[in-house]
Image 1 (cartoon, rainbow, N blue to C red):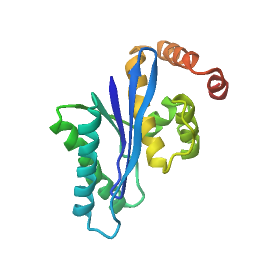
Image 2: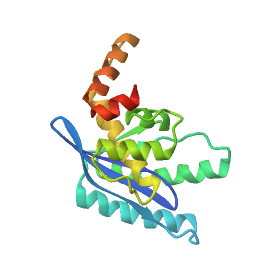
Image 3: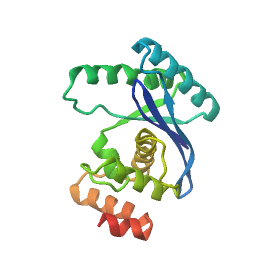
Length: 186
């Protein structure tokens, strides 16, 4: 299964494609799509849409996972982010793909970073989980990979009806991580 994770933005859109291979997720590709800040919003969204369409066509994901909206102090920024989120949602719908949305705090926790941890912590954990160098060109890329990993992890973890069962699933997930990651997460 190939999962395309997306960290939406109106100037920079991070994407990361991971593939579930038996017992682990493997990095396929990742990057950041760019639109000129000097362009009006509708032109930036068109440019990002065209670039992301090429990613969809080239890598043919099976599912799309998008980072959810978080609370902004600035209403205008939240509105622009809402517009930018439409690009991957529409492209996924046109491709007939399911879209999964994950709250930023859940994405961070799914890769072993705390909900309040920095973007650097997320990048370190993503690099470790996917055996990549921690030299992402922008946090948008590591965030997108974290979203894809969050979806892969949600597929692997059994649904639980009690908090004790949820804790058991989380412990099981942590046990599958590399020993250095387990120590850091404890």
